[in-house]
Image (cartoon, rainbow, N blue to C red; front, side):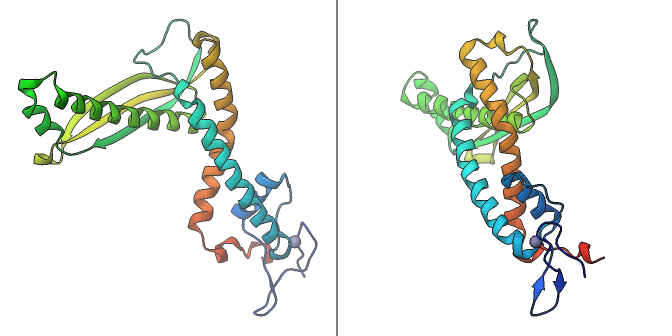
Length: 227
Ligand SMILES: [Zn+2]
């Protein structure tokens, strides 16, 4: 009879006394969050470990979110292609989109005669809000790619939704890994190194969260060890 590589318990796929091996996702999830290194786990030993890993992952996600919130604004977004003093490795394209409110353009038109009045202030606020959302999306995508800066950033505005006058803001840029972070100054430099450390956990937790939220408990098992 095949046995569990972790605890040695007998593996069986009988109707009333199942002890199935967990699948590869569940196995790597457990190994990532419990410092385990077994090639597979069975239901018996794996399920408590799976629950423990999920609790750990949730806790880490909370910590990671707090860290990102605190430091992510330090990721520079520049329109320059290649600042002279920077040593960096390009990682890939990052994008952000936001559609802001309704009535932006009608407000804009009606406030034309009162351009510096209260109406135009709300117009500016909406554009700025859209830009901030896009910047955050760019920065998050950059961190996910393992980067710490964004170059060649470009911003576009478009009216969408016809008469409703919704404003779409689109940003693109190139995520890069900046090596000589000292060019950013002391504060930003510290934040960038914190972000780099956090990024690995962020990617791991995010990936497993997606998998675990999607898959039903029965999908956690595999029959591969019976083959
Ligand atoms: Zn086992």
